[in-house]
Length: 205
Image (cartoon, rainbow, N blue to C red; front, side):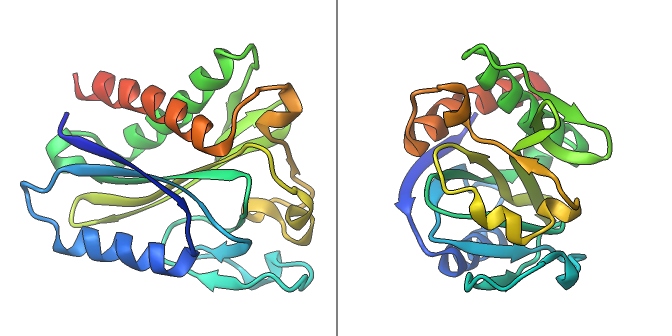
């Protein structure tokens, strides 16, 4: 698989989004796929069909309207975000298969640390019990994906109380730290990427 993994550290949300968009619109059939591993300063992002009323209270965190699917979510320090800049046509993977691969990668990653996680019908993402630990939202343009998934690692979860996470009122949110997984966001991102590459190889195979 012709793919580059880039650890970008903590970067502002909007320039990163614009860079993803530019990468996707200017890429050619020969452009290698990339996965970007990042953290963001505090920001709420509202998907294309996102309803502003899912922001319950203004706690001083900026809200950015963006072009992925899904409702409102929160990104902040201590959460790792993986941006998946993939040519789905070249990989011969359908969007639904990509979503399944992402979710399975998170499930397998957590299972390696003894944590049982699941999908929830009709609610993309990964859950431990009834609490969400990973969110995902993608955009497909010219057969290529951007945006991706976020995994809560070791962060302040309080801002999630200001929103209906992903549009679900009262949805509980957890993080890997709650299960004594001893990883920084960067380490979790690196490991999760390996599980994801395995899943993409399977889908591709």
